[in-house]
Image: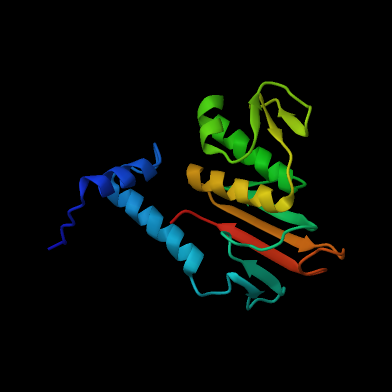
Length: 187
């Protein structure tokens, strides 16, 4: 027999406020997603930035806390089943926003869920880039923030993301000349 859990109304309301429309259909879905996110943050694996046991000596990073991505050049990136052509951090941000718009999100609903600065229509001032396929403009950002924004939106959309990169041999790079990888996939 499965255990029955009774929640106080206040706890249920909090759980309800964390539900993602069209993703979480039941309270159990919300609880499982929260547990998965907790485990991803606290899993004692190679996700702490140590070299993973692989033939390419790639640092497998915790997607929730990858550390300093300054001067990290994207080598390969995939969102869902789609490889990003000639990828860079901003292309990843743009691709996740375009995907959200393809899935039917309005500009207003996307603005509520994204961490990026977006504007409806064409706007190219203040570092914004126009995405004609989505009819929105997205403001550029540094690699650390770009990854955070891409991960946040990928989670919201329930789409896997995988990025392989290399730190350039520059002052300020966390691991000059080394490769790194950040990945996340829905449970």
